[in-house]
Length: 319
Image (cartoon, rainbow, N blue to C red; front, side, top):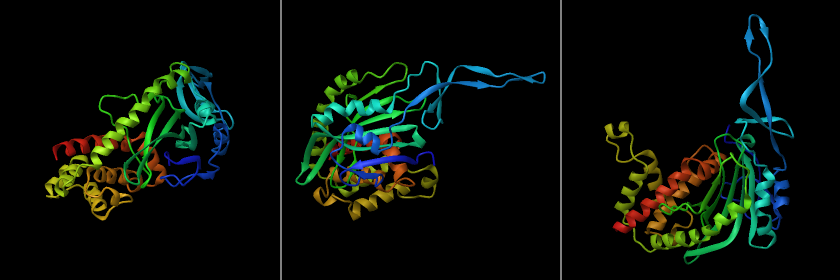
């Protein structure tokens, strides 16, 4: 399957996605690169084709297109433009090296998805906040290095709720200073990205304020039902059949009623309602854990969680 995990290693406790090979939690950035089997490089090579004319063929080069391959085994990753600048895996680990050595971060997880086309590194930062008693949200920095045309290198802050291992989203209105992307039209500049991310530590504080607000606001059951219906609307067919709610809205409502890990800490609040949605995306929706991790960080679930947070705040404001 295209979303399948190729390699992965993790330090400390088993990650929320349940995947990977366990390693020591005091690894350096480069030791994590070796453990995750990401110590390989990519390069561009020319592309050729054989046009047929009057019974003769001759090999000709493809203009402005090149093949991106993994050097170690010549695996074909993608077709890119001649001006496309590849970013090596080591650049991702170079990015974290000083922070880890200085004790400001810990390597957490690293791996590759989509048969090596998507490489990512996750490090735990010294940024946490307590929403409620024993309800802790930890901060992580996610570096994504796609070996794929049309996708940018991305570095962003990712909060994770410890009690249920939900990956949350920093939905901060129009501000996007929690995330920084660099396309492949120019060489990757780690210093520029670090300077831009210096603003992102404020993003965790803003997110913490939103989380605490949701945790302090009571959610009526009928309002939660409307909230889920707005996130998971019915299809025309379901409306024609007079269904009460969509299949996914019904599924998440059952989770909300039954309780998810950590729900006892925030029962009856909008923080609980929002985290029921994120729990569904991280642990219930999707074919398997590999599909869920890709969706939660890079796919539809990533966008859906931002909408879920924004709408939870809207419903809380109307309470």
